[in-house]
Image (cartoon, rainbow, N blue to C red; front, side, top):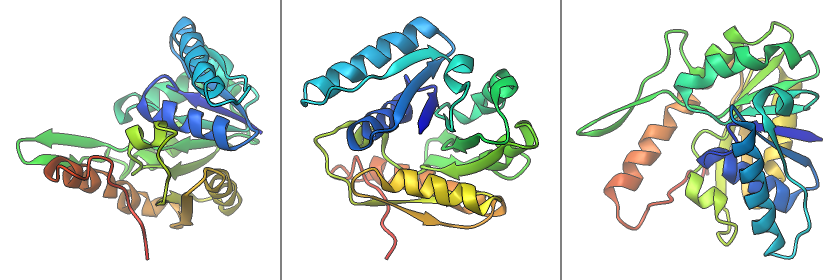
Length: 222
């Protein structure tokens, strides 16, 4: 399976790229608005994997080329860029593509981080609105600590949620996430539930900000 991480040069993109390249045999592709930046980051990821005795190829392209013919396209970009990125690659998305959004709308003040969704209710629903009608959209990987995800020395024991209106797409993304060692992916239902799933993220960040020994705090549902 080909997984394209648009914005794969950023924190969450780096973590997912490294984990999928390390734990699975899927074809991992890094995308960026700047193809040179994407290629440089892809080389960094290959070097990191090689240092661990793993000979893997990670390619870097501009976002549109990365998304072209990908089975799963992950929008690893900030919430305020999501709509523009979706539109920039819409010509290469089709009914066989699953579009995944880990982005969360947040604001910050002196008290901490707060959930700040777009007017449609959630970033997942915004992506669904902006994507071509035949493209299946799933919200996933919202509340994972990016530093912990990208550090291959750290063992995972965390949960994350998937939401979306297409059950088969949710199942595929859950299966893909579950291939990351130590990550359990739970089905939280339709896209209408995305706000509840996304809003966990600022809470997790506030816990990390206010507890010195919990920088990489995550969620486990029991």
